[in-house]
Image 1 (cartoon, rainbow, N blue to C red):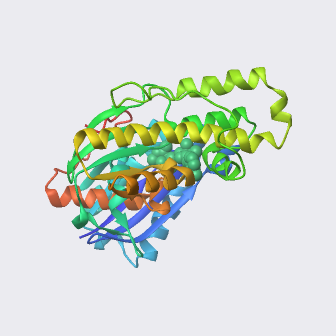
Image 2 (spheres, rainbow, N blue to C red):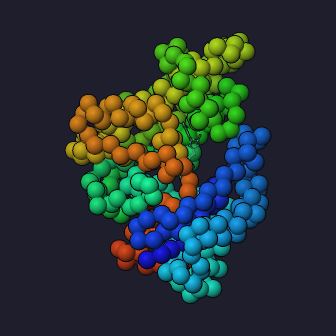
Length: 341
Ligand code: KG4
Ligand code: ZN
């Protein structure tokens, strides 16, 4: 089976060709520079960039895979969740493509693709679902923070999720308060390396709640109030790494403890972590340390599968197709608020 996959849910335009469980090409064009001066994604600009980029990116993915449209057995695209006008560009392109070559169109849930991306690795990236074991899955991105139980491939249930901001949003918003550029997550990660995480103490919201829900807006607010009271710290360059390390420590501690608690309660021996925030170096090392101590297998998405890319969309679409999920009807619309179950 050979399929073309398209991803445009937020600020990356991406296209990939997948062949029998293997990523043959995966082109990602990031719009980070376009949005940086505004401190966040501007939907109007994102849409314009997707419109400009979608055709060359699709062509590049096809030509790198030495594949023409007539060689494709199906088309896949992110149908939701995401920014409506951004989703629309990729979905409509995929619809037109599927119609023109008379092949099935597979609508993929972006968050579910992050969830299963932990099983997509190697050079070239391939689907390693044969290694699957039941797990607790933390999906942690700029738009979502979810703890789910995955019983078997494509059988998952949400146990808890953020009640307000996503963890990535918390990284980005607190970075903005510190005067750091967008996206803030990678900047906090980089600066935290030379900071002391015990310099300042920030809230760990919902850590002591017995359920699997999370919350990050209280942490962001505690950072804001703290900086209002201690504004002189912002002008001292040497304080910024300590602030970054302290904020990062608070976010990672909540994610780690809540995920581990769910794994113990559900008696699973595997934890998976996916989404853009899974790039964070402290998160990766802390999950590795704690899972090793608790005799739990850990699977974290490889760095190139953590952030948005069409490769993960295509590999999931192929799994759905093989399992017999019915393809989308050509007239189906985007689903911007699509929940994962
Ligand atoms: O999965 P993703 O590319 O897009 C969404 O689906 O949201 O995730 C983007 C998020 C941003 O909030 C970004 O700041 C965060 O992932 N991120 C990081 C790091 N790299 C990306 N957060 C913390 N540390 C990082 N190294
Ligand atoms: Zn994403």
